[in-house]
Structures are given as C-alpha cells and as structure tokens.
Image (cartoon, rainbow, N blue to C red; front, side, top):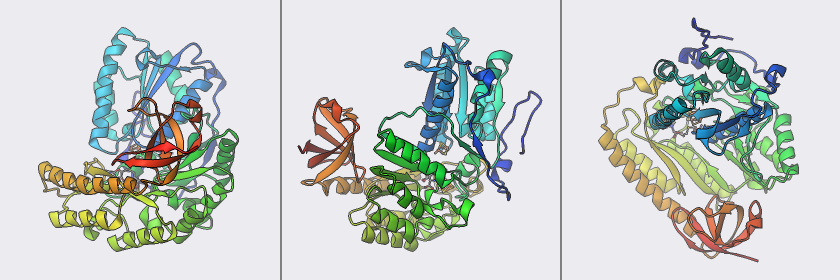
Length: 482
Ligand code: SAH
Ligand code: SF4
Ligand code: F3S
C-alpha cells in the first residue's frame, strides 16, 4: 500500500496516488479493537460534527460506535466533550469554509480546556492543501485522519493522548471495505445502509473519486444480513448509500448480480421502505427501473443527478450520457412508475459553459418535470481536470444564471406538492414539527415533508395516513386519517 510518510511519522495524502486505479482486489476487513484500547475512553465523552453527504452521516455513526466500544459516552454539549471530531466534506469551497469557521470556535475552547482532543476526518484531510494548512496553521488540532482510516480511530487517539504528538494518518489508497464495525445509529426507525463505497466516474469537476477511493461493492450477503437485522429491530426505512449505487456489483461479479437484483432481494426482507442515493443516469438500466416498479418497498422517489442539460457541457463534465439519453430514462421511469417524483442535482457555471448552454439546462428542468433540485455554482477543486479549464464567465454572471435556475426549480417544488392536495398519503412520522408546535411531521412515500396536527408522540416511528389539505413549495399540510 502506498504511503507518503514524512519525518514526523505522519502519513500524508497524495492526490496523485488517489487518482490511480490499479488492478487490485478489494479486501474486506473485519473491524476488531485491540485490547490495549478497550478502556481508552472510560469516564470520557465525545462529540462528532458531521458535514457533507449521507455517506458522512453513516460514517459518523460508525465512528460513534467505535468510540462507544472503547468506553466513550456521547456529550450533549460539544464544548464539554473530551474528544471532538469534525467529519468534513470537500465537495465545494463553501463546505470547507464552514470547517475553518468551526475550528476557529474550537480554538478558543481548547485554550481553557487543554486536554480536549480535536480531530479532523472525512474528505477534507484527503486533500493535500487542506492537510498541509491544518498541520501548519492549526496547531491545536491533535488528530487528522482520512476516509480510509476510520478503523484506526482508537490507535490515533491513543497516540495523540500519550505521545502528545499530532497524529496524522491520511491514506491515499483505493480503499478496502470495513465490515462489522459497531454503529450508534441516530434513529431507531430510519437507517443508512452502505451498499458500495468510492467512485470511479471521475466527473471532471468532482473531488469525490480522490477522497473516497475506487468503487467497492459490499458483498450482498453482508448487505442483506444488515437489512434483516434492521427489520428485526423494528426499523421501517432504509436508505441505500453509494456515490453510484447502480454500479453496484460491477467490481465483484462482472454484472451478474446488479443493483436491480439487490433491490429485489432487499424487498424480500420485509423492510417497509427503501430509498437510495445516488444513482448515475448512465447506469440506470431497465432491470433497476423494473425493480423499482415492482418492489413494494422501493419508494416512488428518485434523486437523479443530471448536472447539465447541454450535450457539450455533459461531455466535458465526463458524465457519459446525452440530454436525450437522460430524458429517455425519465420517460421510462414515468411509464413504469406512474406518479414518480424525480429530483436532481445541477451545476451552474461549469468552466466554459455559455449562456446558450445554460439555457439548455433551464429547458431541461421543465422538460424533465423535476420536483426539486439541489443547485450549485461550480466550485473549483484543486487536483481535478476542470480546475485547469478556462473559466471566463464572472461570478456575478453565474449568480444571475443561478437565480434563474432557482426560479425554474422552485416552480417544480410547488407542482410536486400541490398534486397531492385532496389525496391520502402515507407518512413515516419523524417527530414534532420544528416550525409548528402541536404538529407532527414526516415524509410521504414521494419524499414530501408533511405536517399534520397531533400531539400523540407514540406515532413517532410509525407510518400513518394523512389527508393533504394544503401544499406549499417545501411542505404539505394535512389531517390524520383515523
Ligand atoms: N455521486 C453523486 C453526487 C455526489 S456530490 C452523483 O454523482 O450523483 C453531490 C453533488 O455535488 C453533485 O451531484 C454535483 O451536483 C455537486 N458537485 C460536485 N462537485 C462539485 C463542484 N466542484 N462544484 C459544484 N458542485 C459540485
Ligand atoms: Fe462525483 Fe461524478 Fe462520482 Fe458523483 S459520479 S461522486 S459527481 S465523480
Ligand atoms: Fe462531501 Fe465527501 Fe460526501 S466530499 S459530498 S463528504 S463524499
């Protein structure tokens, strides 16, 4: 395994290494904590800040599990914790800005509480520049580790405690699979289930293939065992995770058992609701569409990132599909799963994108009938091919386009909720509504946030029927149907 070790015994990241895809076999490693760390956290507390995608949320649940397995307890107040971890995201510049801000706050806290350990993990440390900056300008950060080093958390804490040296371990490898790690799940009725890790797509703007390593599918037996265990524990909904979930299996079985097959087997476990994120449009095949249509547990909502509506831009983004091919898949999805709600991700102002090309994205939003979208202004990521491309459009101009896009997208949100007025929908109740006391809220099958009047907290974690009486862009309101 390639390591980049400097004189202080730090293992530092290398984007060049991270880009490599060798012909190697992924190893599945069973998590095991060494005896000498078994009581590392006795009498101590931890707090984890989580940023970024659902993958990071799932990873934080594993880190919490690892910490609790060696004696740490969760702290309600991060400023009172003995170990504070920041699980970071590097996908856009503003994601990183937030981290530098939180670090500023923690610096003050550490002055009065010198025994507090501060650790940075997740995607940001995988970037050479970020780790360099952390080492040089943030001396109060004790531990820096990457996405491939989670399992070594007890060792790194031990090192930081007892040697008082900064523990830096960021492997830029293609990655293995860590199984059997303990987890502290946030919810008792909704769960994340990774089905694969990493990404081999190398979209030219994106840092993820560098921060997460190559595409590695978990064995189907391990996934199904996890889902069965969740069903036994009373979980109602799972979200299958991966950067390209419908590439599932390609690396382990030459396409003999694909994402669609996995959905069918998961459906048989008796889990009530299955969601997944994110599929790549190129890999959304008929088998997956058919499984979505026929498996009762698979929810009629698809987050289907398109990025752009223009063929030239899609090509230089390395997305490997055309506008027409994308729209054909949308048509097939609507034919097979009538009423399906489709949402997307869009990037505005990719290097060299012209106004005319951007207009193609605007028309695509209408044609595809999206009921929501995460929209982003292109953010330059050092080390990616797009970072070297000419980018002549000003930030001001990109903001004008961005606002136009938002308007088009917002229209879809409203259309997507209004179509349910007068209908009865099934809602998995998450908890009390954040905005309105006396209301409970949850998500419908089509993934619409739904509020309804009730103070019966025993409904939390259950699926209830709600008749929709009103709909706004971001939520629906209705009455509980007895
Ligand atoms: N694997 C997922 C997305 C992961 S990142 C997929 O391909 O669908 C989530 C979203 O962030 C992407 O869909 C993209 O829209 C956006 N994104 C990624 N890199 C970006 C960048 N450099 N600038 C702006 N947005 C970016
Ligand atoms: Fe990034 Fe593309 Fe991979 Fe998604 S598919 S994680 S956008 S490289
Ligand atoms: Fe961010 Fe890493 Fe996820 S860059 S989006 S946390 S894979």
